[in-house]
Image (tube, rainbow, N blue to C red; front, top):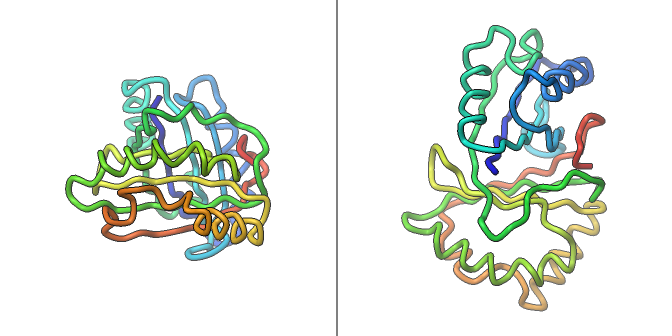
Length: 204
């Protein structure tokens, strides 16, 4: 399995109008990949932006869909609303199950850690040891590493609400469950985005 995380920048106030066309495109039989999630950021850059997660059975399917998007005059079926877009390719941490659509929380946190040189393998080893205990507090959507651009990992966590997020994170720290061993020392810098599932998102 491979994943694509797309950041879609849209004209102001156009998100509600764009969602139905985006859903039609991403669920069409002629479009590669599987729609897994679609979120609207709540903090940070929030004006007219969507985060789109899709899954692909193999690299060939991902590359073909990427070619289709990049050469299209109507990318993602919402060209009339788009002002810019960025697409990133990822592979999941090998010890994690595939993303399973379903209802997990009202808010999702997207964290991206840009890694120091050589930091990916020790980071994944630490995660493999720590995730089972951490996931007992609340499940992980996925953790994945970039296949293009800077060395990085992105992990996605659902939470019932923002208060629960603080409580779960505090509990994991106090109990020594999180962060994973080899994690912080391999991070060059990090970003975090809180986003809300849109009506078309299979992950909600």
